Length: 338
Figure (cartoon, rainbow, N blue to C red):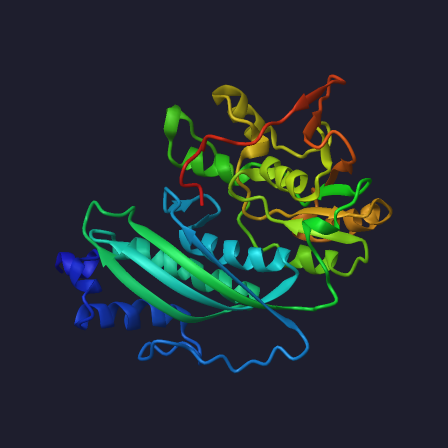
């Protein structure tokens, strides 16, 4: 057995035999479906949106380490892209997959990543319909980078957007925040810290579909890079209104809080990969909370704050009875989280 049998080489990206074998023997083996034709450059999608609206998104993933408790870069890419469609009110249908491999990556790692892509896509019901693979020289990449684009369909009667947010609306989150950010950091074994916290990376589609049935739903977003606080700032800037969060109600795991206190991180800015932040009319907030808590992925959902006229900034009502202004994120405390 040679290095070509166990690790990615530049020959796997030159368009010749090794590249063909890589695509057919690994990617096509896991992602095989009637639409994925490795001999063509584009997929014809046999699907009519009917009276629905097409929703399109794209994203790139550079997480380190490539594998972490609760997932890997492959499952993360599928969840991240389909979650962007889901919070826009769409049902994910198709994905494209762009793969950038670094010379020297072990095939065993790559196979686990591709298996993660396949499993996540299968669970969500989305089809990987097209893809591309490139290889860069050793030292020019981070092992593997992924780019995914997604297409979904949305009921045009479902109107969502920051412009629909009103003073008095309730702000909800579907579960504890910061799990993904801390899980990835612990997987790096930085600062001599280790732990068993798992990333929250998962599909939010069940939650968004449940919320979409409620007439008072205004806005949904998945708090990935920049976390809960960054989504709240988007609401402030997009609506011209203020957001007040109740510290006592924002769910944060003790393990996440402990690491944040030790290292000076703010859990409200840490990435989540399986959560939904929703704004809904106050009179519908209890129904929304009940809908989320009825699902396995939303059992720890909470009403965490409200939208208010003034001041037009993000405030945290502390457990001590005071208020703290949360400014926008400027530095990236945990690079390459997603």
